[in-house]
Length: 249
Ligand code: FPP
Image (cartoon, rainbow, N blue to C red; front, side, top):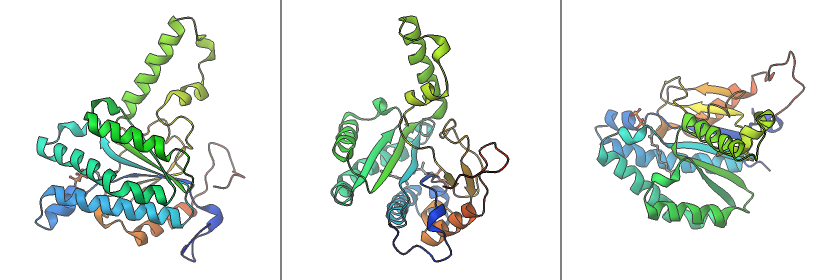
């Protein structure tokens, strides 16, 4: 079901899964003479709006890169602020997301987060696991290389224990051991703020994903900006390595 979908978008050819690298929060704030953390606070509001928009427009999954394995290198006070922001947001928004049927998953190495945040995240995942309106996937302490190394380690251990034959290692098996096991791969990746790199985000999962880059800073990425990203997506011919695709979204 789609609600208020702009007339120039084809509801039959929307991405089912959108991933976002929310870049430019710090610059957005600095431009306004505000501390960087004000950018993160505004960025969180933008993410909430985007989630609502995806749900309205019938997009089935949204993945957001909230904190990378490299982000620990930021000044301690910024890292502390982000962790507190996650905790507060989850407390504040949980009831409403539950009510709206949002399934929430966290991907990444959660074991380095504070005990209270880990407990909160695991509870939210369990309590929303049956929800079906939209799947909201938040990458926290996520690094794609780290994810792939973990898979290698797990599969090697299984082989060593005689539970896995190396001949049986294939793409499907690897995918089943990623944090994203069972999730559809993103159809569209959006990165804001003019940067054009993947920054260790979903390297395996983005193999056939369409990419969209915009100069807009994340806190300013509103419905209209998303509309433009979707228009661009709908102009593309996804071939998945073939000559001509008969696949639709
Ligand atoms: C990148 O901008 C943004 C981040 C590292 C943090 C993003 C996190 C949120 C918006 C909060 C989301 C919360 C939940 C619970 C999902 P930047 O700081 O790298 O900006 P810059 O490149 O301008 O410095």
